[in-house]
Amino acid sequence: MAVALFLLGFVVVLALLILVHEAGHLLAAKASGVRVPEFGLGFPPRLWGIRRGGTLYSLNAIPLGGFVKLAGEEDPTEPGSLAGKSPAVRFLVMAAGPLMNATLALVLFTALFLVPQEVVSGQVVILAVGQGSPAERAGLQPEDIVLEVDGHRVDNHTDLQYRVALRLGAPMTWLVQRGEEKVTATVVPRFTPPEGQGAVGITLNTFNLRLERRTVGPATAVVRAARQMGQVLVLVKNEFSRWALGGAAPEVTGPVGMAQVFGELAQQEGFRLGERLLVTTHITAIISWSLALFNILPLPALDGGRILFVIIELARRGKRIAPAKEGMVHMMGFAVLITLAVLITFLDLQRIVRGERLLGG
Image (cartoon, rainbow, N blue to C red; front, side, top):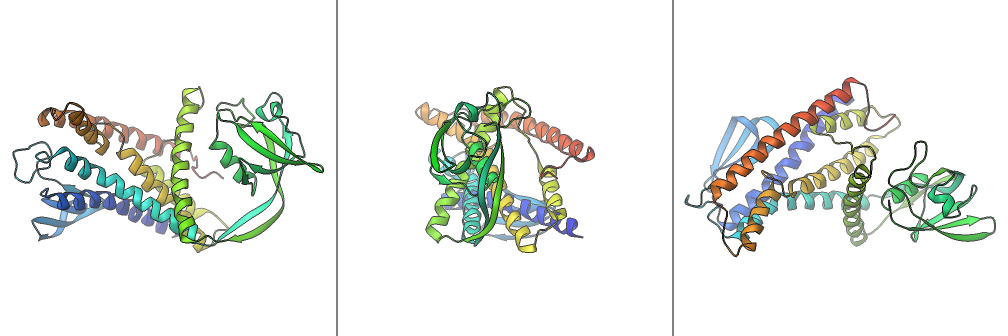
């Protein structure tokens, strides 16, 4: 029953995120005088609809998001068409969808930081240092207690691992306690460590564990939320850099993989309902931010691809690529995206059949 409820929750979350995205396009189009024939909740077949202000607001049978139909996306002669508007208007309408997803992510991350947090804190101790590792070159030793990295207090070994993942290939300043003295070391985590070692080449554990309850105010929560979104960008960049340098390919998942995450979350033991809701909200924020980033990529058929054509038009001092040609490019891009979606879905299903988990355990 719990798994079924969480899978239902996944459908609701996915629908919400896509609906928020499409609502961004709708609001920007309406504000800019672009005619909107239909705004749909879910995908056809249509179950119900009502017309208001020249737009049909429809409820559809397949509850996986929504859509917005804009008049004349490639036909500038159509009255109230998007293609007939200025470059600034077209840019705004196309950017509004990703902007709404980014805004939702910021709101959700902020809400999470406003919730009082129980943080596991303790002494992060280096148990072993790998031969030839960045840690050894930096002079770190077994039994060193890690106090800070780059001026940030280290709560536990998971916290330290996260901060290392953000700084692959870049120098980090570590402050450690060694006996009675404090020692500073400069560590450069590597992208592609040898098998059996991590980016720094140390074995860690956290001792003398205690729970600390921490709260922050609204202004701090917003700043930390924005910082968290920036860190997601860094982690994505580092994953692709690791791949380019010969490491394992980044794990890519589609809707099936996201549904698997929600199902695994439902099966996790030791989580109270409130904790599950916090984790679900965190995952939702990450997915919303990921959708914003993906859709803003300058690829045909995506919002970013359409924005790219606007930028090209501006660079050519108003000389526009023929809308029919642009439409053909987006059509081919859409075919490629559908092919990739099918491939990712196949890989997601293959992972499930093999019994592999995304959350570990």
